[in-house]
Each structure stands twice: as structure tokens, then as C-alpha cells.
Image (cartoon, rainbow, N blue to C red):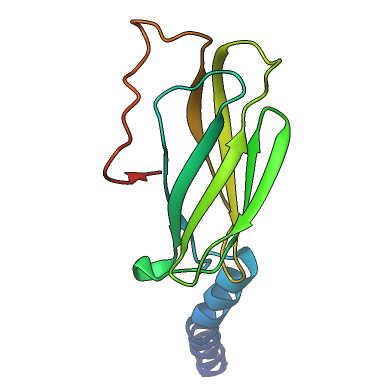
Length: 149
């Protein structure tokens, strides 16, 4: 009788040891831990804007190992949405208008990227709106390099 219990115990341990990696792999695919992620690099053409200006945005969307990705992009600003898509090299440009009636303040330009096989990526860029240039305003310099977001 003792020998039969030992055999059943060894069989149970073997089955648990054998099935555990398969259960972990199944759980990973169900929870999406092997999901791929996007990277957004973006810059605006100036440090601050006046009401009624146009914000010009330039950037790239990449995936794993900096591979270019075709993505649909939604830019949201002051309640308005602008859509665009990346070029074959993963780059994009967009123009977003600034309202004439919204008060001068700091706003957020939201960028959402959607690509098949990747998790959605959302980032925001601060946008400063002021009627007249002030000594407190950052210099209106176009950066030479992209900013990693």
C-alpha cells in the first residue's frame, strides 16, 4: 500500500512540474504580458504660442528595437481632434490650430498612437498660450533633436 501511495505522489509531482510551464505560458498570453509597445518621439515648432496660431508637430513612432511602425495618430487639443498617420519610415507631421477664444494658459496636447499588434500609446506635450510675449516665456526655439516621451 505504501508503494502505491509513493507512486501516486511521484506521478502527481511530475504532472504538476510538467504542466506548470504550460499554465504559465497560457496565463501570459491571456493577460497580455508579451504585448508589444510603441515609442513616440515628438517636438513642436516653438516654445509658446499666441491665440489663433498653428502648432506644428513633427515626430516618429517606433516599435520593438526601434523598427518603424505604421500607426494612426489622434492629436487632441482644446476640445478639437486632428488625425494623421505615419509615413512608411514611421515619421509624421501635423498642424493643430489654437482657439482664438480660449483663455491664455498652459494646455496639454494629447497624442494617441494606435497600431495593429501594439498596445495603444498616449502622451502629452505642454503648450503655453499667451497673448503677448513676456520675459517669463521660454524662448521660441525649435529644438534640433526629438524629445523622448
